[in-house]
Length: 117
Length: 111
Image 1 (tube, rainbow over the protein chains, first blue to last red):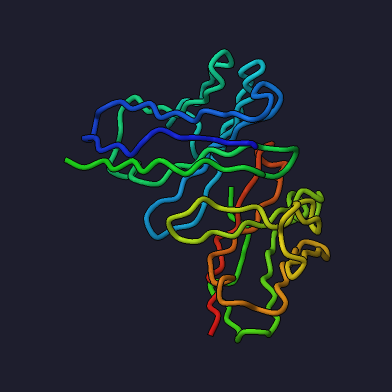
Image 2 (cartoon, rainbow over the protein chains, first blue to last red):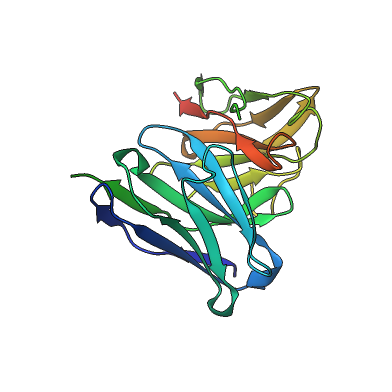
């Protein structure tokens, strides 16, 4: 069974750094792209970017380029999403999902990030 | 890039059919068959309902169907059930970013 398990909820202050994780199991982690999706409070889903763990090739949505860093460690089947300096506007639920060709077929449970002073 | 355009809300009574539209451009919906639909119940992870415009993943009810005409894709749910009440999002590959884009989401209310 394909599973993506994300790290737990985080509460941070503006300006702090953060790295959240997404661990895959039940499939060949290096053979599928992993995508990150944001959902701000009361808003819709937004593609942030994708990474191919096999070679760490990464594509960012223009809206998120330079705002976050997506990475992966293929040896522990884990993808990451990180911020160097959080803003209040980064408060959101973040989902990782496996990308099978053009669709997201398995999703993590989500990580809630709250940024507040 | 701009989100695909979906109606903010639709509603229907149990047993009825509803259709949710998803309008894009020739750079996304109209140019590729990589249209997918997701069901999202609040507090849960989104679930893939349709991929490649009209294909259903294993385990998804055949009450859910997808289609596309020009730059508009559609999700039809027949025989509405209470558990279908959720937010629905379309997504399409877009050549403008080499990634994909979601629609703004549609809240389905089962009356």
